[in-house]
Length: 516
Image 1 (tube, rainbow, N blue to C red):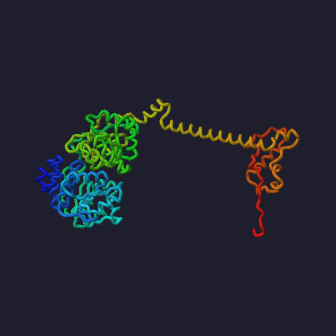
Image 2 (cartoon, rainbow, N blue to C red):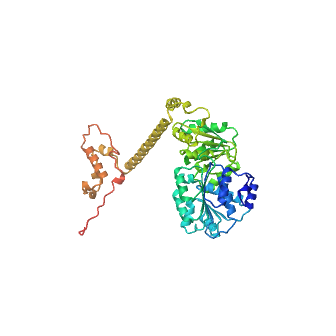
Image 3 (cartoon, rainbow, N blue to C red):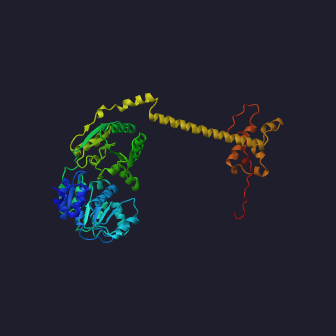
């Protein structure tokens, strides 16, 4: 079967031929005639089978009739991520080269003003992520009452990202008489419920068993230690030993691991870029463009790159972490082995990943072979820990604790040195302002107490109203005066008999008036 037999317009067929395609994929061959017949379609197919063109090509044919009105798009396509939305826009630009259609992209990280300007001019095709679409609607910049065709793409990814409440709200805003196309790679019960609510008498197209993987992908498991530095070492060894490695995507479960792994690979001489959800849109698109062009052969990414990205020439996929959700494994390895090409997918598995691995094998319906040895071949970590401590004198954790104690000891010593310096400076100042006690003893005079050194006004201050430091100083002087001269002198506490000058300043009390 050729594209000419599907009922597409002449303009669309010319654009498809210019792109180099002659034979439609199974989902395209089955879905395009039903879309052209204005039927609701429920498409279930594994990733990389051409779902995007299955709704892009018939939409271009249908949009040849009619015109767009200001702030009222004719068709609406919802995508879970910015990258997928931008990719759909590229498909419309490629296959719609013979059309004069206005296409607008509403995603985060782009100015609202530029997007509002496009909507105001009138849009034939509106491609958006749910959050940014609702932002424009709540600002009063967008009306959805003119939508004739609604496409919900990667519905299972919408579920994982928590967009289902937004999708339900958007569906209520578009006309009830719309045509709806619903595409998903997997069909969990939640997605089936949404399909039943959104679609009216749909045509179900299932070209492959749900959550199946392409036969062109060679899948292998690689046993590795659970610690981060061991996994990174295993990954580097795997990349260097990979056969026919043109480029590859390395998937991590967490965003912070993406940045850490990218830095580690760069330090070991690999040309690698990073892609995760916390990056701004410009940096994300720059990383993707560099990877697509071959400037950067390795891309470390979170699951933001696992769904729908069309990079046909990816030769390898490395799962640095076993995905928590079994469906994510299908989407990750689906980045390779696309369009009939062969690909390889390696998953690093450590102790503790057995449950997630069992869920993946149960979902895809087949066991995954081990590259060399399985988890039983790994050395016992509990037995290896004393060996690591013996080689290094102590374990990494103990070394960290000892270093912390040394740092604390150095800080305490610094505080004690600073205290001694301050006391020395205070003693020198007191010796310069008051005669030393030894002079009074040589003249036969008893050392004067703190109260005697004060003026007559100060001696009249009651004891209970004095400053606590003054009371303690007075008590120290009394103890020194009443002590037997022949007795062993007591150890000086603090500054001893020396009183700093600021303690000798007179205390001025405000006299109370009769009204007080």
